[in-house]
Image (cartoon, rainbow, N blue to C red; front, side):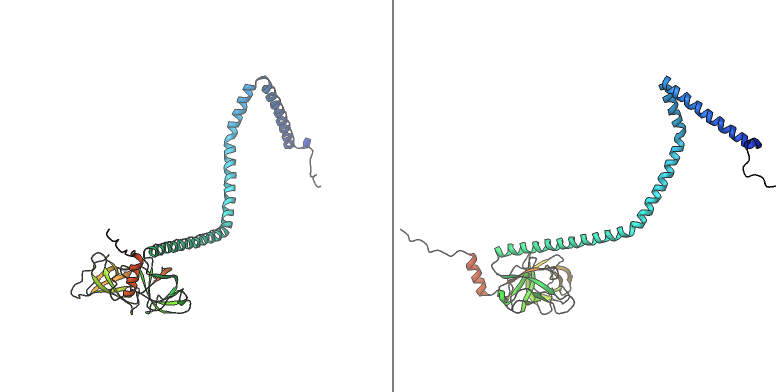
Length: 301
């Protein structure tokens, strides 16, 4: 015979005990609640102390639950950050590249402004400037060092005119077209510039090496007084290049002279000035412009 699925409590001692315990717990809870309500009305201070004691007992459980909830929330945040890391890295790399481009552009503009201001100051004191332009391109690997100038015959540029930047000599015009011109750079092997040492006027010759540097030779081969750091300027000897234009700085002393580096690097120079060739006619014209005309003395009374 199959036993019934649910038996009555009267037929099970375990069920009777469970039902009795439930009744006892319910009655005890009701009595405790009634007593707490009466205590809160009769003795509010004591009731507050009792409530504080109960909170102290439950505090460890609250701390443990808070720690567990915080850990679960931290795991969620970490997982979210890991998922978003790829897009954030791409965005940060894009912002960094944009900032770098802006910094390079700003630096280029600042350097160009500095060169233009220096050329403007030179024009105010030096009357040899004929026209101003920009170096568009310059060779850096070929042994023939030639740069392209943004102005040509339209601005009066012809072959044989010196070209200088704000920091020093660049070279001379090799040939000119209607709107552009070729400049033979100072470092070309076919370019020879008479120079002198700035501190004592020691004459020498600067030869282009074709690799961006210059060889400096004194007129007296037996005498080699060059030292690293010596500044060389144009001497004006032989014409073409006006005197006192910065040319190069000595970086190494050699057996037969010195190795020098140009002060104006064509790869970094943008704005340049084309000068009139240094000839006796130009010298007299410059002196006439700079010096005031002499006046005849007044007759004696």
